[in-house]
Length: 184
Image (tube, rainbow, N blue to C red; front, side):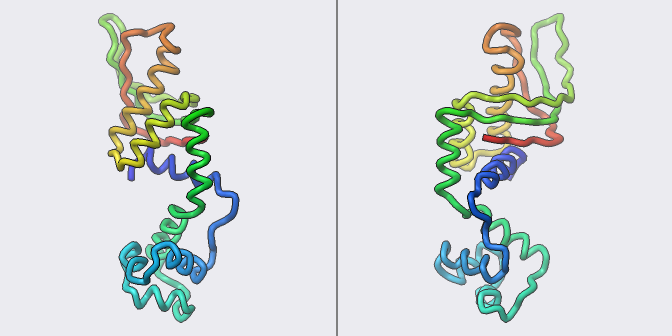
């Protein structure tokens, strides 16, 4: 996963109306309910089916930190899918998304203007069409670069070109991302 995919995942998790299971036993039970077999859960987590069953029964209560992190991530990635879909659909049709980032933005501009990449901190609300494109790209397992291009195009059109009122020949690229946060 890339920076933008991680930001979208965090934004999805902000929509939770109920907290995911916190106990190891509850988390494993939830994953078993979603994936149906201990073997499938084990394959997802990179452990054995016997370990999954031990965690479920409570015979083993403290997995190694890296396994606990995988369990937490697997539960959170599957938690409340209808709530996620509803919020994403709303962002893609009505509300749009807000992108807050500190990144190095590259420019291609006409001769006589600067094209030096600059580190900028921006908070820009992008229209629903960019949200739709990002969600579609994410659903198709697009690479980080493709998602960066979508965000860069949105920043270019909304922030730099101001909806076509200025900088008509400017082309923006999103290079080094220090941090990025998305909300919708």
